[in-house]
Image (cartoon, rainbow, N blue to C red; front, side):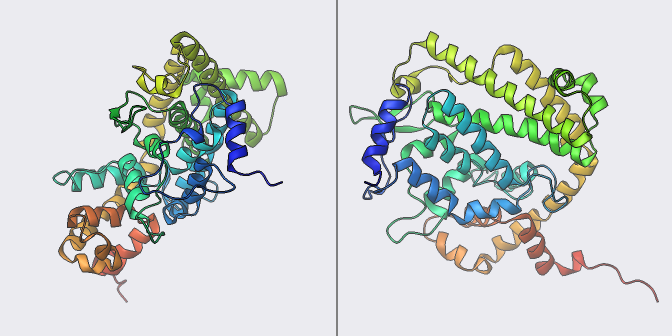
Length: 390
């Protein structure tokens, strides 16, 4: 007999930890739907995220290096997939709900602007008198209203638990067991895991891209980053002298493995000492329970400082991103004056949202390449190369 949703839910009850978020205990969806037949609620959420337009557009959005500048450099999509893989591994080790963890990880950057964090800063400045812009809240907008695929409701109509995981730094409210509305201190452990998996991915993989581009050198890392030095020594002892690509790969693999192990063991200790025995107690807890050790936090801070100093603000990365971001400003003002030129996008938001937010939603959804094309189309005089004298 086929394995249906009921059997999948029973498996969760038998296998997952008592403080995990069971799909059978979901607080449900904003718009009621019949439950899926062969999937759990969180598996349905995951599939809706993967099939969304916003997810596909991540392939052409900047992670660190401007999209298209290197065949092997990460995009926002490859970063998202790496986050999902790390999140699943941690969730499995802690006996948490892998499907929910993966779904949150896959959806966490759906609202990210073009041109990475510089694009986010530019949109936030443009929207400072209209509520600002922040990519976590934009991810919620994407799944709650901007995706338009279903006949009976806006957005993707994902479960409360997935939406809670995307809120990240913002308090999220929902119905308590008694039916009253309650504001929670912390999200589920699955949401906490997805958040740390994001950090692990960008610490390690931005480092990898920096080395691949030549902007970061191993000789510098050995003298300034303890994580790199320790992992280098371990790889050397285990494998001897390796070729450059293999050596860097194994060093970064060691860094990821060590971070994952640290999170699993530290979280296990936090859960044991906290005494939580149900997901409701996790949400009521005053602090997050998924965490690094204090020693690992110091090492991560050292790596983060090094990356900011030597990669993120390196002129090779910083200047092209700034140049690209400057395209967003005239585009924003252009569509503010001529919102109907957004086509169906304007009609979609005209009744429910003010024009600045509609324009911001439109620009935030663009890929890097589409921004450049629109800028060239609308401002040809600024992009036309000067004629060469004959």
